[in-house]
Amino acid sequence: MTTVRIAPAEPKHAEELTALMQDSAAYRGQYATILHEYQVTAGYLNRHPTFRAEANTSTTTLGFYSLITHPPELDLLFVANEAQGLGIGAKLIEHMLTQAREQGIQSIKVVSHPPSEGFYTRMGARKVGVIPARPPKVTWERPQLVFTIADTQTLTENPAPQTRTQAASRSGTHPDARHQAPAPHPPATPETP
Image 1 (spheres, rainbow, N blue to C red):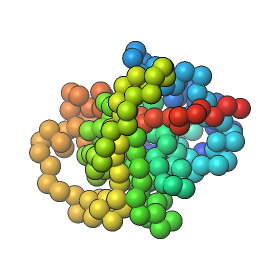
Image 2 (cartoon, helix red, strand yellow; image 1 turned 180 degrees about the vertical axis):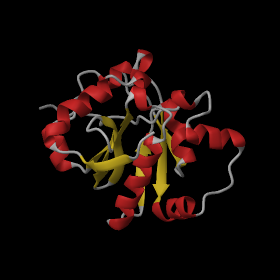
Image 3 (cartoon, rainbow, N blue to C red; image 1 turned 30 degrees about the vertical axis):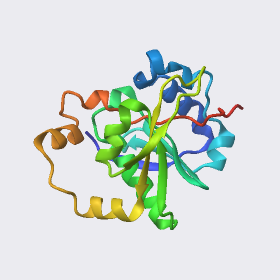
C-alpha cells in the first residue's frame, strides 16, 4: 500500500465523510439504526477536531476520526470498506493519541461498536464498563473503554511481544481482520445541518 497521510478534515469534506460512514459495512443489519439519518456536518467539523486518512497519491478519504476534547471522547472512527485490514484504523488511533498527548489530554473515553472492542483493546484501550441499550435506536449494549495516554505512549514506543494471531490481525492478514473494523458510536443526538 502507498503511504498514508493524515490531515485535518475541513467543512468541504462533510458530505464525503457522511457517505463513508453511511456506507460502512460494520453498521449494516442490526446496527444500522444508530446511523439512520446521521450526518457529519460542516458545523460538526468546525467544533470537533476531525482528521482524514488518505493515500499520498490520492485525495480519496480512506478513513477518519473525530475527537471531542471536553470531556475527551473518541466520537467517530470509520475506515472505508475497501481500506479495511490495511492498518488505517491503527494509524488513525496513533494519530489521535499523539494529538491528545500534545494537548495535555490524560485519557480518552471510547464507547465502542461491539464488534470493534477487540480492535480498541489491541490499540491499548482498557475496558471500564458497558453502556446499556437505549431503544429504539440502540438496542444493544456497547463496551465502554478508555485510552490512558501515558499507557498508550509506552505501548506505541515499546510494543509488547505479539502472538502470531495478534501480529497477523494487526497487519491485516488475519482472516478475521476485515470483521474487526473500527467504528465507534455516533453521538446520542445526531448533528443535523
